[in-house]
Image 1: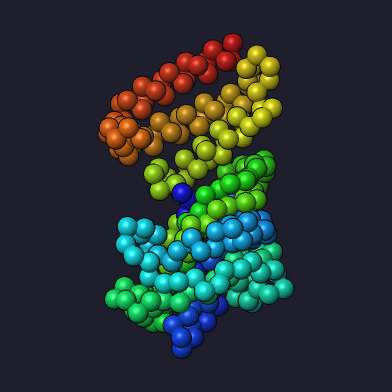
Image 2: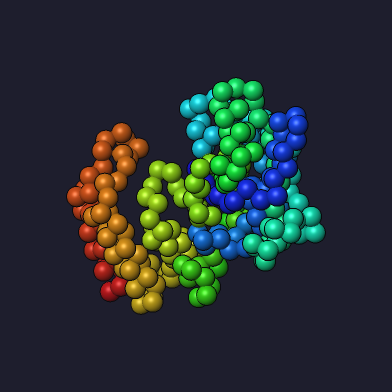
Length: 252
């Protein structure tokens, strides 16, 4: 699952405990190098709206704190002025109305929103359909266009992911996002020529990505892998060494 956050914009708080606000913006390229396109949420809203939850800080181990009364996509014409000012390239947004529960945590979060102590919203989602485009002006050199996403929750948070996409089972270092973009771009259909021969330019990109990953791994202990065993820095670096040798073979 990935997360994406932004400030709570143009919130409306009704007497019935319903808060209406924006949870995602379309059209702009965010800090994580992602651009969400209009229609990306259409399928998930139509097919599984009843499964979308309202959580505090994406905490799925605790009971939900609210109920999504409505979730819909809106166009640029319907965007609030404060959102347009913050995101000039915005072409639309995901608008949700949430009714907060009369539970201790629901009361706490609603009070925080009313007082301005809780100022960010975030979504938890899976990227279903997406493509990459090279853009030398983009922060990471590529843009991931999110065409369809599977929405799991809309959650108020203390601090979001700074509008960046972050895999919760991975590192939050932004260099890993660059690595993911580069590897996805180079392994897309047609990226490798027949005989698995890499161009010198693409080889340099992968070698640079490996170097970045190695630097991050030496600075932090990675999380457990799927087998449940702790994955040590040394074991991951050993795997990187194997990958580097394979790259050397591809370049010859």
